[in-house]
Length: 112
Length: 111
Image (cartoon, rainbow over all chains, first blue to last red):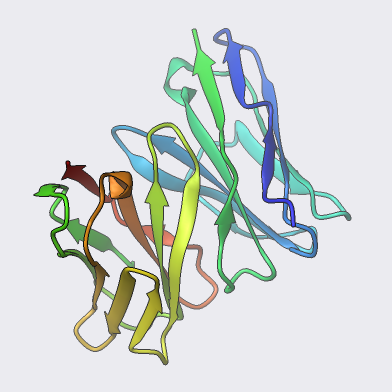
């Protein structure tokens, strides 16, 4: 069974631009969560989706948004990028939110 | 608000040693607890999931225990190897809230 895939794996953007990251969950999984990881803050929760509905949202500004499609794939968008948005963005999938979480390899975003 | 603490932040041991990593959480009303491993620049690999009704889980050389009443979990690694070097994270889920992570323990196993 294929694992969680995230695209792109690496991204370099300029301040003020916007970016869209994609996450394809393990087949059969309907729950997708997103996290931001930085050396200083550790893992911080962004969003959690289950069957196309946002169940939880972390404490991030409105520039961060996400959605989940009917095939369970998820995207997150960051508009008006800031230098502080540089991070590893991780996606996790599960059969349902309270089940075992499986993480993808992450997308490394660098904002210059 | 759930808070998860992992002590120590870093640990260095010689190969072959048995070791224990600690995780504590402030709210004992948890649904489950999950241990992960992360190699530098990579995603998280799930090691063990313990449901709130369980006391321990084992996978190979790894054994995780859970004491809900005291808000603690331990990850025991037997006969450590250099390939075990990584950051180990524990995460707790309570009800409908998302996973709350500790900051991890960075383990170095010296050959």
